[in-house]
Amino acid sequence: MNSIETVKQIIIEILKLGSSGQTMKAESHLLGAYAELDSMAVISLVKKLEDHFGFEVEDDEINGQVFETLGTLSAFVDSKLN
Image 1 (tube, rainbow, N blue to C red):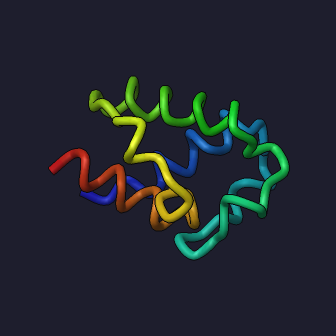
Image 2: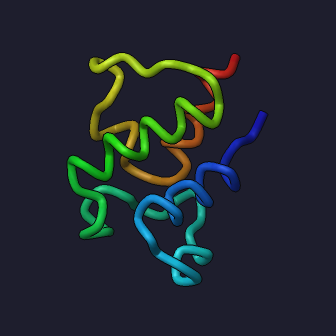
């Protein structure tokens, strides 16, 4: 399963990026690239991903590598679904 488009839409919704978020690609950086992506937004994003996809994320699974790019976050979601 490739969840990248769904993950992108969730990021756009949580960060309230509007149409500017539509330009995100797999290699688009997340952490450090969006001021809106602070610690509270990460928590909201993880919760929304859990609710949408029906999995749970453990605290020790949340790290900078997972949130480095749209592609790495999407790959993480895909790994939780398999």
